[in-house]
Length: 350
Image (cartoon, rainbow, N blue to C red; front, side, top):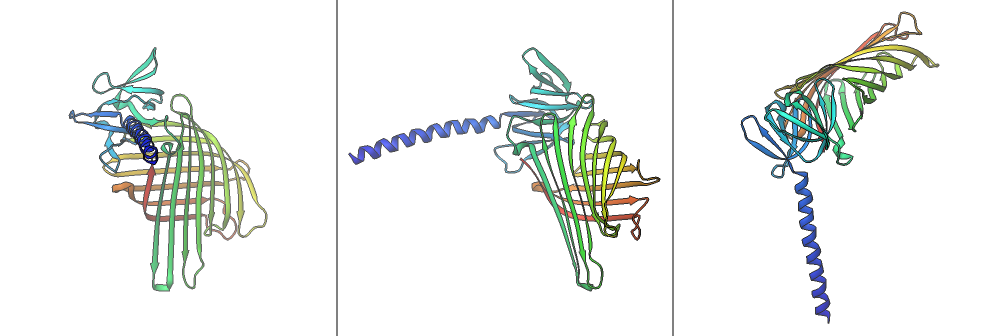
């Protein structure tokens, strides 16, 4: 009797295991059902993770590391999944993709609605059928310096994260510098932002953003700047992205030398330039100007420049500078402050 029970149990377990393996393999195989054909007629089968900054990322079953492929080397793309695509001219479509001809991409939006584009005109591809992690990306980089002379220590941290949906994207960043030295004042500096972008028609963007800053050089205990506005891609290709932005902001500041808070209303204008696909190097530069509407003759300027070199396994080296200028600083503070950072980091994207 006991043997029959054990036999029945083992038989049921083996049947369950076989079903699990079959359907599990099919599910895994379905995630790797995308394929691309290169200009030289070689092909690759896997899962398309994204296209951004001129690089197509694909996951395969035979490599632990995702493949990074220059988009302009791709001639054909095939998939049964739906993707969100953006073109150079700002057109956005959501649907299944295939290549009816070499160098073309067909987007099947509905049974009776389809569009054709040249592959070189596509600048982003984002899969939106999967879960939260596939839409999430993050990066962190750090640097540390220890000098025996005067017991100097310097710690640098830079980080960012982002999330993308069909129409919305959310990004954030946090950067910190801490320097201590025997016989000298400790230097503290930090900045960050939370940004929400909404895709409008024809390369236009709706923007809501919160920036904050603290800075011992300019005696800023904390500055919080709340911004709303619009942006437009002036240039959007597989090698470069240039954006113009502007709007209104509400600025709240606390200074070390003052008890009360300062509040002001500003206009803001800015531009952001991204250059990529230069071997393993990418460049980013942003500048924002804030002419005050409530404080006469006051204007602030924030500038940032970063250069990044990609290493294997999603590691990278980065060097950058940030500059903050205030035409009317608080009494006893400098009008200009800057920081130069070199860091080693790692990025994550599912």
